[in-house]
Image (cartoon, rainbow, N blue to C red; front, side, top):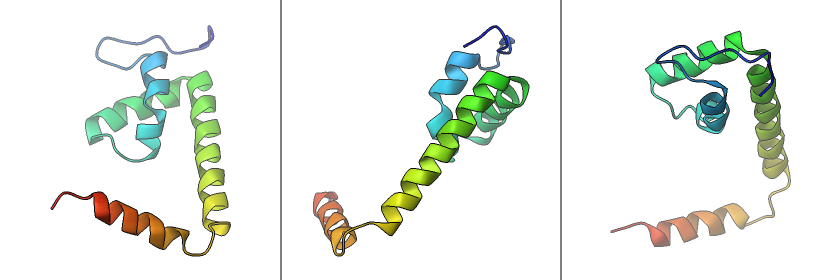
Length: 88
């Protein structure tokens, strides 16, 4: 990250940690405490916030594109494949 990045305080994520956790953050898979820490870092660090915004838009575009152009029957085949691999 650049010189504009927020300096990590003890117990708070640094830029490397924040960027490494962007997709987990975007997917809502962090616990409340970790989510608040990453959000605080993003609020204070322009370069990391820019990275977050880029990845958020990329994820949105990929999701939208996949929904609108999924070949007919693919969803059913994916679900069937997932069901066949689930433990009994």
